Amino acid sequence: MSEAAESLNFIEHIIEEDLRNGYSRQDLRFRFPPEPNGYLHIGHASSICLNFGLGIRYDAPVNLRFDDTNPAKEEQEYVDAIKRDVEWLGFSWDTERYASDYFQQLYDWALQLIKNGRAYVDSQSSEEMAKQKGTPTESGTESPFRNRSIDENIELFEGMKNGKFEEGSHVLRAKIDMNSSNMLMRDPIMYRVLHKAHHRTNTDWCIYPMYDWTHGESDYIEQISHSLCTLEFAMHRELYDWFLDQVVEPRKLRPKQREFARRNLSHTVVSKRKLLQLVEQGVVTGWNDPRMPTISGLRRRGYTPESIRNFAETIGIAKRENLIDVSLLEFHVREHLNKVAPRVMGVLNPIKVVITNYPEGKVEWLETENNPEDHTAGIRNIPFSREIYIERDDFKEEANRKFFRLKLGGEVRLKSAYIIKAESCTKDTDGNITEVHCTYDPKSKSGSGSEESLRKVKGTLHWVSIAHAIEAEVRLYDRLFIDESPDTHKDKDFMEFINPNSLQVIKGFLEPSLKDVEAGKRVQFQRLGYFCVDSDSSNEKLVFNRTVGLRDTWAKIQNR
Image (cartoon, rainbow, N blue to C red; front, top):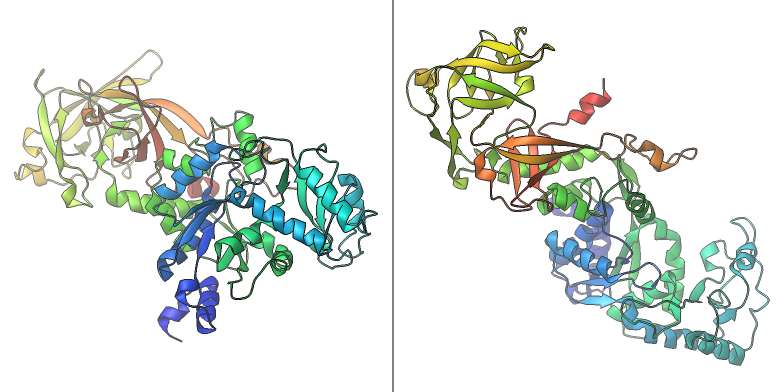
């Protein structure tokens, strides 16, 4: 077997086998079929990357089809958000489709099933039908309406369509096999009555098709070659094929449903119902809250489309479900931002440093690289003056030999500036240090070429000039849940595992080059992490979100 063949995932092996057995590349067509009842999340990103990735690999079209068959939960807002997310991830669809495009065709086919004796109108309550379904080990019981005449079924079904009946009064069921070992084949519901306006068809329809009836037939209409879905739909494949049997025509391609394993992400939930609960109960500020696993939330937090695509490629496609540690996703955004994010300086927990031998009123503009990983990123100038801020944790009065930051009698280099030495400090009445007094070596300026500028000291600190610093609100985000699998506990609700420290809001002081930065801009605050300008930011008030730290601190916390 060639190395190229060995590198294929099992879905690609299926496609390659089909190409050897009669399919042509012109037959290949894929689709991404989200329901517009919420925002896309990181799990959807894997499916998007799979389907559109296959389209790219095989130079085949990929449809974006909205499974919009439940007007009670679907909105145009979600349609727009989904399209925005797919485009942001870097993909383009061939055709934009909607299941609602096919309502008339689906209705006509359902009418034909009634005429062929393969569907009937059931007038029982949902509770009665549920009792008659049976169990996995016991056969179901036939509905007393199962053998209605074709004419009566047609009349009732047309009445359902024309709005003559209340919700819950009738459903259309496929007539298959109440003894089937697959309970999905025990006369599944095809249509229900819903008197709700649809986001596209308004009140044109009073009946709406169920997922299993809609999905495969939509694939067939669009001539999708491979209908890829997650493992929970494996048992649906038999029904998918049965419905196709009722409508396929000779010489037309028959879609194939194939399943892959869902990749669950630790310390989060991806159920739309649970995500909606987080929104509605105010645990988060909305679907695009940076703590949410939604694509819009990740984008707002500062994740890049490249990092998400790389993550999806790394975890791959498999036949068994497993739990992926969120630190792998964080690794990929860290790796990509390291290459592309400009380095800037900001101090988030400041302590004042006065350089006593630096001339009062003097300001130097020091040259520094925007990104040492990308020399094409250019340089900028930052102001240096007598009074600066450094991080409070970067100074101690006394410290052991392993403390390489600033301590009394010790020296450090200020990034792109000078070497300074701590001489003394002042304290308030509670003993808290309020100010550190230092001296600087005028000959030690970075990049000056002097011997002193080349002198090695073990610590280098970031800083900002107090006179030039701009204030910003900085939102420090952490994982939303403290448990790696918050929705798998049978005896506890997932809401019990909410991390109370998932958001900390502080005031930071930043270098002045960030004054006019636009929303969405990603930067590295040197030595602190990667940050992104939030959409709440304005000219009057800068707001930054922490995307991810420079290192995986969570693992250290967990191992304490």
